[in-house]
Image 1 (cartoon, helix red, strand yellow):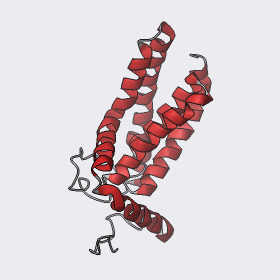
Image 2: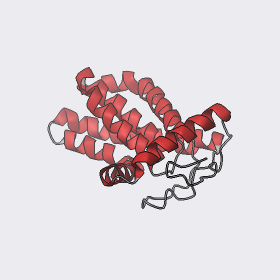
Image 3: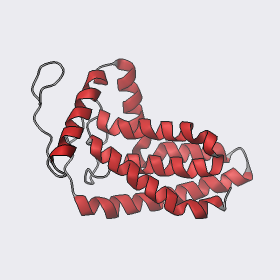
Length: 193
């Protein structure tokens, strides 16, 4: 694959796992992200988002910040943390073990200092937990909050392809898993509104 700067970039390890159409999607997404990887603001934003997505930290912080405003929201914060723990277990110890897809790079793009995960690439756990949390938070806060929570989830998920620790299709798959799990727990979550 030819990079925007004219250099050659070989296909990512694990490419071909989901067929040529998915490979083309991943390559095209990587080319588009490469156009902004050297932009200082984009680099800082997505690297920070990737770090904040580790262990769902950003979502625990959001839950805590909401929790200090009322007793009801404090209960929601505890529930969100517990649900994120269950979601992580399902994705990282369940779904990822089924696919065992290689990551696009062993430890991310060398331009970014990111933690090297020990699990397989598909689906993205960051994207899954982000969309899961956004679904839960939108259930509690109403539809008007959806752009905030899902926008933040999109930044966290995109950050993983940006730093080259995930394929774009891993992020899409993770978002789908997170949405599915979020909708699955919605009846339980609604009781805490």
